[in-house]
Image (cartoon, rainbow, N blue to C red; front, side, top):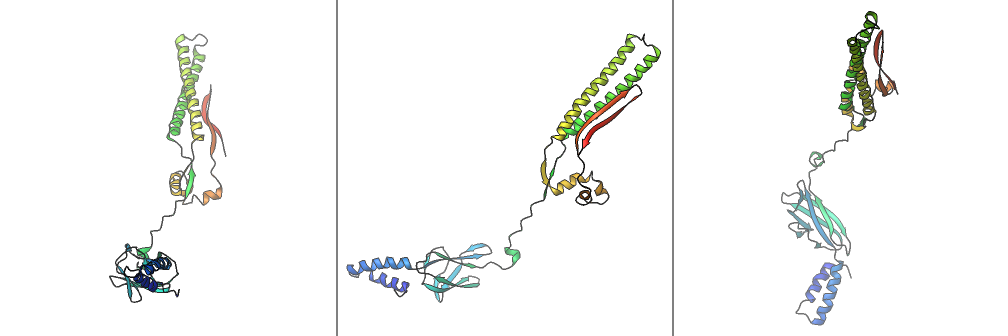
Length: 276
């Protein structure tokens, strides 16, 4: 009742001995259980640069409580106690801990880690890269675009040849030109029409693939490298985020189709579309 629980425990252990009368042992055993439930217990631990360590002697005042840390609870008095942790190297840590009656498995930890920030500091996590959105042009767009240009040039050339031959025939043999002359002009004109048909199909397919290409998120450094080759600002020492931003967003073609016009006097090739 005076709070001397460890002394009471030792006394009750003595009177609960088999040599004592049974009537005494019954009461002492019951009181011993009650007292033990009120005795505080502590669990000691120590941390070094290598992690948890066990080669530590723990004293309470001059009393040795543990010669090696094993994680087992130890009964200690109620109130303010002073614990000293000593490693085999002689390094020592002292702590004052207030223990309450009935408090069990209180962890008392000693930190023996080096105070050098370079040894204990966790490696700084690299900041996440700044992301930006890009719409890369697929290889199929370049291939179909090339096919469109080739077919358009071929159709234009054949169309011009057909018109030239038609003009020559009109001036030399029309309307009595031979079947061979007429057939040759028709074959060239048909080949020109086929080339233009291929150019239209390839051009439409190229436009659809270009406009429907997906948007991907990539690190900003990757974006800058991919845009640097086509940026006039970079060649003049400018900045993608500076002068270009000052001028506003770069116009982007949202619709473009090839246009070919052939007449008796010549032909021209162009692209018609709009930007935003």
